[in-house]
Amino acid sequence: MYPEGSKMRNVLLQKYLKNTKYALEATSRAEVEKFDQVIDFFQKYGDQYAMDYLLMMAQGYQESRLDHSVRSK
Image (cartoon, rainbow, N blue to C red; front, side):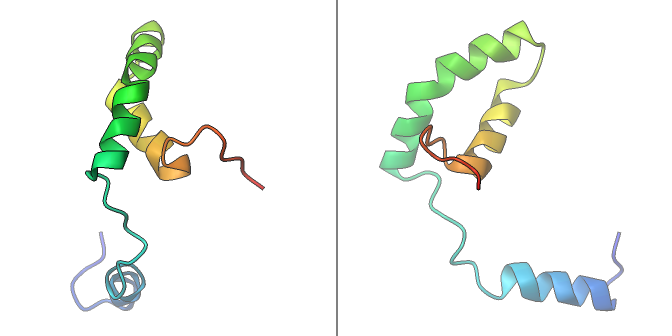
């Protein structure tokens, strides 16, 4: 999509790879426990709406870290 050496590619690399502190440890014990608590819910509604439950869980994790109390502004 962005050829090597292009300005846009360099900007994106700097933005996302220069500092990765924003990336949390998704496989930590606490995060896996959250996953285990909600997997049945995502499987149920994934089947009901013919959607990939893991894809929905990934989206939910990115938006709220699977924390039901989190609300957008």
